[in-house]
Length: 370
Image (tube, rainbow, N blue to C red; front, side, top):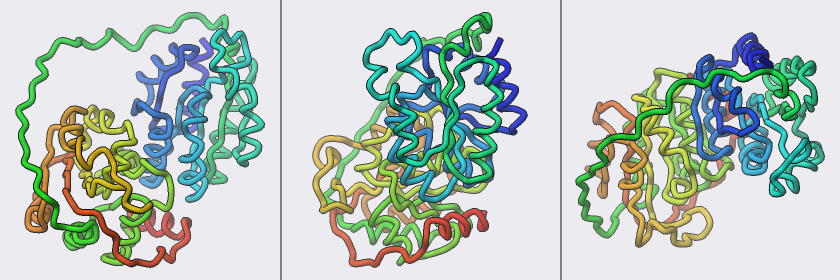
């Protein structure tokens, strides 16, 4: 079975975490992977990029296992996160769209994919036959030696004639009682985002902090710059995936400062609820707006309760705070996580400068602090 050959390569290369989203051409590989390598299934491939980035910052050797069409969903995260901070990321991609492809929608993006990767400067290896699987070693080594994403495009032909693999076990029982008793009064917000970040930063000791792109990172830098802060300079929606990936590979407490716009755009909350990392705390600073781009309203402004969304995703411990005293109390609370803190704030930005640190400086001092 050629799938076992690939699992052996991943194990020999000391890959210790796989963020995955399956492809029907690699269903046997997916079953084997679950049994041999710690796995975080994701709902969107770009969330897998964030999870792997956080894991790499924590000293892990992660890989992303997806189908090649998922690279299209991931390109901004790959360029604005993995490439910008020079983080290692081997990507094992089932290459769709060219070999006996029966689904027309797989062709337009996937057939010219090598040219897309060339244009972006992302290295890759095309693996057309089972005898070329050894090239995955080169992909992984290049990723970690050069601190870059590196892609193995594996043709479905590789898996032909290898026999059937056993599945990873019986499908989980769906029988359960789903019930929630939930009532919250949302008051007119009094805190600004800067107010809330001031409270959070004042409670910091040795926690690792991942701060959302734009104004949250800038305001955190002004309030309390410290090596344990990882400032996101790009990668919309990826603060919580990065924090989740980091919390998955370290015992250190990880706090994420995220926002309602990013939280509405990510699919990571069900993965957090399923994995239940006890050292993760997510602060969703909800001003009902895209604060860094001009305060355009989000759906949280009038309709969506993001705390309830976190509850529905399986995160058991949630709390809504609407004033500085409430927020300070939550920051000092020693409850096990994951804890989702929904912080109601009003729109408005403080005048703060850009962060005067290069991506490499942010990365290196963060890793050094960990």
